[in-house]
Length: 282
Image 1 (spheres, one colour):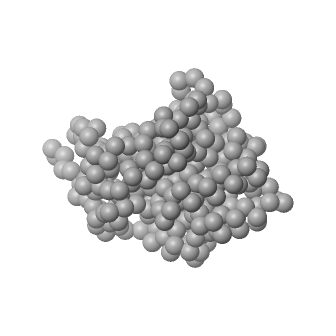
Image 2 (image 1 turned 90 degrees about the vertical axis):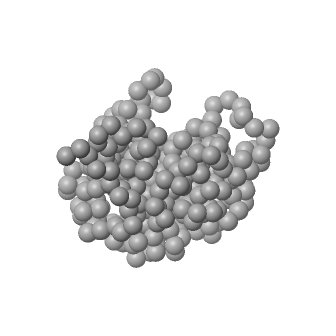
Image 3 (image 1 turned 45 degrees about the vertical axis):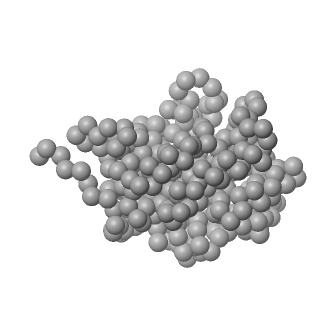
């Protein structure tokens, strides 16, 4: 099974017509895609009422990839708003209850920052994170090239597999140390995550400061040839995992939803069980 979707559901204007309100967008989103990445959980551990609402608004077959809170991955600047890291992880895991009870949790995504490099201290932290998450499926995405250097890449993949992490395969600009190459390897027989970040090299190298750095970083539209080249890569991964979760994150210019629909068409997928589309006036 291949699930294709995008990150977040609020900013994809091409999906919504007829003045769909912000609070109703997820209902409409579920008519287009069978999966979404929850980004709000990165900025704050979400109250249970939010996940309960989101679960209730999506079809039975819908799946969520929930992004780990920034304090858990080292993005948080300053002190975490919890008494301890252990309490932080417990609060986050508790917030997943509705997804888990409904069977709609695909995985939690731990996306580590560019400064999280390959060294013993960080390897030990990954072990600790995995233990704290218990039996919750967790995916790992690196943003530092040191994990994939020729002399350590196999050790990295072996470690991810041994510790029970789901490998995240990324398409992103090749911008030196703060980016990773495409590594077509599944570490979990059941699930693999693929994320498309675009290929805006200039935007990727831009410092994460100022008001609009995200708008520049993910400003990219994949062309037909680039997506077609990925079909073969996806078929390789499909042989290694029962389920592939493919997310487009290139939405600074509103391109993610269109590229995701193009990929669905190229893969020849016709989803059943999507939500009914809202009818316009005409």
